[in-house]
Image (cartoon, rainbow, N blue to C red; front, side):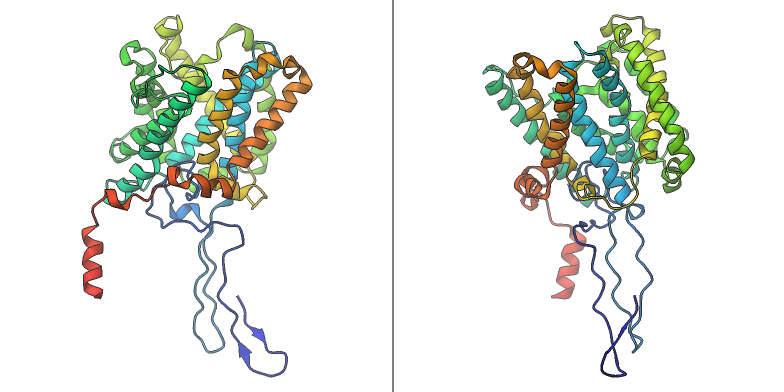
Length: 414
């Protein structure tokens, strides 16, 4: 920053300190771990110094006094990636009722489901690298993930009782319903972060655990452990990624190559649609539960892991790096993720896709896609964040002991 010259004299007057760009949320301190959809996280799970743009050098006034450093800004790339991924999640949920009557919708559905959750989970792992068992980080883990899980699990249960006319639907915190499985998974993954930093081959070990899970039908449905274990390799991979890895996939040649790769993926999915079940992409069942030999589960787990990594890299290649009109919405993806579930499930309970057959026509499918994108976009906006912050980011100071070090500092100042 330079100083301006006074128009009527020779004296120079320093400019006011630089302020963050309008509309760019201020990041939390680098030690605050957060949810991958968190409205105050830089990209996904925990805020880190690598997630923010480096502040420019300190400018000096004519008297030699340094100006205050501008506040670090959020990394637009990760906010853009989060927003685009949550839009794909909503689109995928809107396509699900169409897949029985449209082979094209089924092909797109399978391609999107191959990479949208792996992309989120990789970002979650990347921003969980600094997580340890420090009290403030454990507190954030509880208030940012565990408490929203309890709130929405209860809310979804009451919603299902009302919308599905099922008053006997029990509340069970051990059986995540619909979208809440991800919060359970993130809670477990983050708690295991220190362990993954100790082992020598973390990603192969995590992939081996995923393979063992897919051939273990006795794991059961408690806490959706099948999904927790089968998706875990992506989180562990994210833990060990570095900024240069994201720079690598954002090169021009990668963007160009990703176009034919996506095209081939859609054609392959179009061919495979009638020949395989899309349940494999949910990663919530063992091979035996899907009625296939155990070795098929091993092959599918390894094949899907490879395909997911390729398509995720292609997705990252096309995520804009600069600030876009939707960049600010990337800070509210937890809201869009959890709240759009009420609409997605309500459309099934209330039979919208059965009552309006024109939705199964090509123009109807386009309409459903656009509506899904618009709805989830609206649910990520700042007004919605302010309205539901009590559930997503509860302070809960009353529930925790005061930090001894902070108390000591306060006593020293008084």
